[in-house]
Image 1: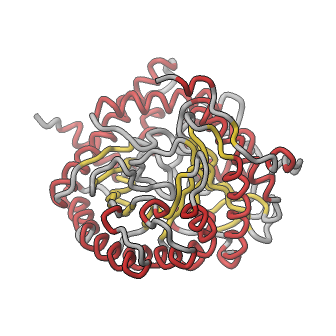
Image 2: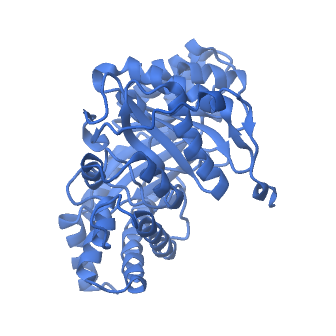
Amino acid sequence: MLNTNDILETIRMIEAENLDIRTITMGISLLDCASDDANRFCEKIYEKITRKAEHLVEVGEELEKLYGIPIVNKRVSVTPVAIAGGSFSEDGFLKIAKTLDRAADTLGIHFIGGFGALVQKGCTPSDTALLNTIPQALTETEKVCSFVNVASTKAGINMDAVARMGDIILDTSGRTADRDSVGCAKLVVFANVPEDNPFMAGAFHGVSEPDTVINVGVSGPGVVANAIRRAGHCDLSALADVIKNTAFKITRMGQLVAHAASERLGVPFGIVDLSLAPTPAQGDSVAYILEEMGLSVCGSHGTTAALAMLNDAVKKGGVMASSHVGGLSGAFIPVSEDAGMIAAAESGALSLEKLEAMTAVCSVGLDMIAIPGDTPASVICGIIADEISICVANTKTTAVRVIPAYGKKAGDSVTFGGLLGHAPVMAVNPASPECFITRGGRIPAPIHSLKN
């Protein structure tokens, strides 16, 4: 039976507290498009993507009107291109990237993910060719997103791949220097990457997934912050219950939209990713949640503890609302996409080192962080290696999306627009880890990886 108060509460969440469905993402397998000819492969993937996702935007807009809730992004993810593309040359992979971009334009979607590789134990010739193509592909396309998984708890950390990513990130930064190095905002380095993540830039369609699937990512930091504010100065156990109850309501809305989209599109429902994903809009901030919990500013001592509690309560509430939770599912802390994180970084309260500590208890890792454009590749590799090691040791997913802002120094700012927002350029520790990075090889998997 419908409860009038619940209906009114949902309306308030949408109108005043920035509740939204952050993304409907259709995953599409490209494995049946295999061909030894790059041009033929491109024809087949364009036809399949535009056929399978033909009504994705239309259905998303219908559901927005039906339920009165914004669906911010409509996206597509595909099989990791290094797998689906087989043994193509760098020219072949560049053609594929441009074909994916053309398909995204035809569909009217915001992003298409999957231009990436799984190299946690080493690189095939196909992986190497794709990696070499990433900087040019992200420069010459608008909507293509790229990921590279360089580590897992079972495999350890592929330091050769980490070293390669430092050069790739700097190359991409230089090629898109005229746009504040925005190409790097479409490139993420993962460990323990999930196969069903609907959020960019790391979304891809895993090989264990069905031919097509619908995954939905919910949001609502503003809703959680307001619920905490209304709860007043209660103890932390009571506060955890407030967050759990709010996460339940947010996730139920995501579950409703996911099932409706699945039925209308004739595509299986996959998962709801119950992440708190912020935007640059005032009030729609994970940092503000932490400050409502009692911190004077995000980045102060106590921030990691507050974030750990928030992340746990969100997951506990979300799993009660949906039987199929997946993706990343937790609190995102991207600097450029979160007004509170931006303010904390600009004030000096939030440092790169504090962000790294926070990633030990949340989902995404070091995300959308602008650093000086003259940061050496070895230092970028060190940042990646530190973050990835947290993930591997703790059997969790995390990632790095840093943007060396070409020509900018610490204290400057960069602007990307839209959901990507803007960011202060944060200082990095200039001490070099180059000798460690250039040893190469793999950092062995931790001992608990033997558990099976």
